Length: 314
Image (cartoon, rainbow, N blue to C red; front, top):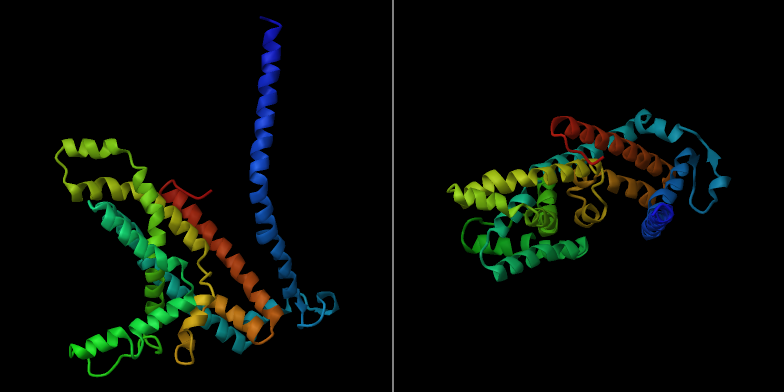
């Protein structure tokens, strides 16, 4: 026995090492993807420190140091534009947080449906828009909410309004309109995570509540929703990390001369500066500033959640 024990220990240590190698090899493709598509592009930040002009090599451009960053707040016109797009970005995101419980409530209510066929149909119909591009969403929105859309024709036919309401091509309620469009597109997809969380709730909790005489709404209020709150806060923290990332495609598609003052968010501003105006270096400087602010916001939200609720992302 004494001779076999060292062999068994060696075999166990060898198997553990081999297992760790296998885990590393399985994780290697993901690590390479992260390095290639998330960290390697950070080399582009170097453009912010040069006066780069399209058509020239970066090394042939003049090194200007922090000049582009200083112009963010030193130049009155650029400062005013920056504050304007930050206002739009903050307003749209804060309005989005007002609607953030909606996917959770939608998942809870849909999971309570007794008809599985109806449940699958609703889930499919609400999830499909997530896979549709914003250009197609613009066509659908114009067909429904446009000046000559279905909604205006129906309201005029019922006598509720006398003339069409120009909802999409207007400078009124732009932030709310864009947030509602985001909810329309992403409601079903966002609810999938909550469906998974609901399926993971211990069924013994519901059985115990049933024995105590709890009804359906009491189970939802005292079991389902409290069990989903940690998931909700994790998603909220991650969304705060993306606070300044509104994206370009939605606002580029729905933007026009009438609503440009309120629809141009930070990402679209960077796109317009770099691609539209050719100010590559300045647009990269704005992007670097955005990334740093987003990291600070994410860290603050994560720290606050850890102190208040004891849950955090890391």
